[in-house]
Image 1 (cartoon, rainbow, N blue to C red):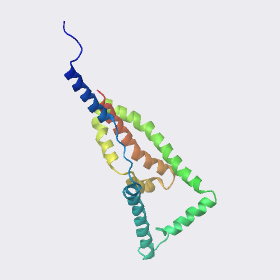
Image 2 (cartoon, rainbow, N blue to C red):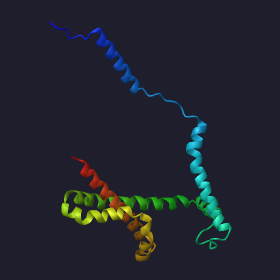
Image 3 (cartoon, one colour):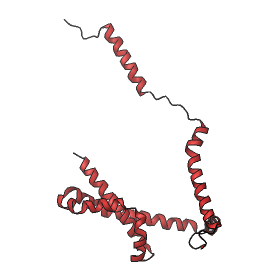
Length: 183
């Protein structure tokens, strides 16, 4: 009768295999030195922000943009932000922008989800609307601001229109891609 126990040589091979698999699963965590983190992660964005501020101040200081209503100096902007903070109005300004974005995104979900499902499931609709959605998705949302201001004026409707035009195609196309990936 044959034994089901592995031989000594097979046990050694299995032990070596298990040790190799254990070594693959073990993560050797080496702490990144603070200086390296500072140089690679903190310094580049800090330099970029300082460079933008320097160019901005240079445009104002050298008179390239001399109308303060078009481009105020960075310190003037900071003063207005600081005053709004001291007067308790800054959080209200921030909440206005955030609430517009959240509400606009919720509307975009309500429109984009059924639209995406329709485009994903109905071939005629996909052939008719799919290319339009892809074209609208590739257009940056900020490109809609000038026409929206001209057509709708500078108000909440314009803001929601820009958010919808930017988000609905992305949501619909994302849903179409997701449905296409499911077998």
